[in-house]
Length: 223
Image (cartoon, rainbow, N blue to C red; front, side, top):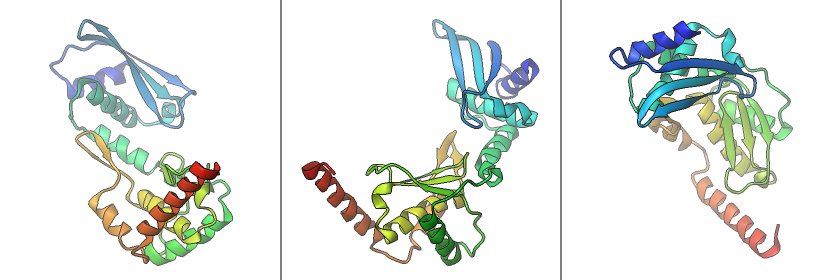
């Protein structure tokens, strides 16, 4: 592992003094996550300890180098791209395709089938789809690692609103995410163009109105 760390560092910083490098695999991380601890003397970085999900143990060297270089760019505030980082980002983007689906909510499965036929030519692989908490702040979420769509339970009785939020999250699955200047991009122009194809052009207004009413009821009646 030491050789991989040194190769990853030297590939993007051939002239920089290399700090002490170490890495540990841990089962405490969710799938394929990582972090880094930094040791400094003054402003000089003297040591880096990378914490990697134990899932990385079975990954190719190029994937491990990619995640290390991704973190190095963040630490040193640089944007030096490598083929290894491209391998890593593509691996994470498509990870959901290889995740076994769990049981999805029946309504969401029904709506997925409708959306897949209407907007995706029935080519989109089905993710796991569930209702979560009754939150009014995050109405939907797509987890790339788990290939999991979660929809707020606050929308559960509003079929058309659920369908639109589900459509939005399925677009995240379709378009994955892009990286630019070391940052993830989720709502790209292509994403927004597809989002505007939803059949009800007033759906955003209806969604906003529904949330506003829900918040007023909660403020006045506590529910």
